[in-house]
Image 1: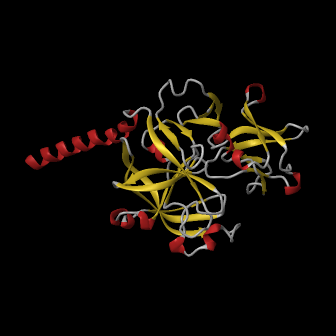
Image 2: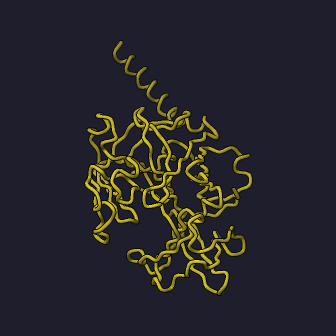
Image 3: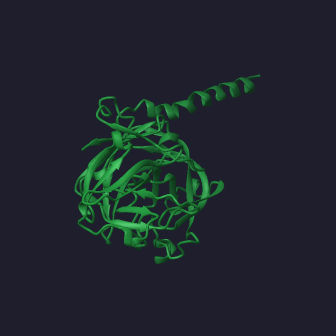
Length: 328
């Protein structure tokens, strides 16, 4: 029976290794992953982290407004590029739709958090029907990069979406066993920010928390005008992948002119976390934009983009389903 005993030993070894992959996340408290600012030639700011895929470093756009790790096929090893998988699609607010397959590879961050986890291998980049002129139409397929605004060769070969809503391709941080993380963006392209995985109690002591709405990636928020009794309130994302303050619902003529004093407020009025902004300032990422209502909805929603990250350090707690903010 030697082959049977060998099989049992092999199975026991595999069972011992499997939880260890996720345990590495718990064993690396306070792991700091550098965040780099990348400014496109049109002035748009993006933020990136480096991860490894089957041991190969890949720079990925850090996007708190979407969910899932998605990698353009040319960036992958032969093994990952040819692995079979379930067809998946994912669309972004820009109208870009990534089409490909859900496959798995060894994914990790420098410093010790790694594991076998699923991601989307992107084979086709297209536009959704409602936005046929999306950035994917502006460049040949070979020159397209994620988050590059349709500028040839600009952007990234991957995007790491850390949003907390469900998707066929999961949040890679929670899939690795990370339950809490802090996003601290750099103050300009010459500085380095931090993505802190499994922050310590000392790291999180000064944060004020707001609960996510149901199973969404949104929190209750308001954009309040300080010189008039006007406000836009609704479910809101804070989104490292978006520039400006986007109001989905009102007509463009309802927006406020540049120079308007305003306040961004998260949470209930009685215990809100808030900070002042001036509409239209690049250094505050506070340009104001209108967008149509979400499909099938007449509820105003907000995307507050980068502005909260410029003022706060932001703590995401997947287990408690809360978003925390602390002064920088």
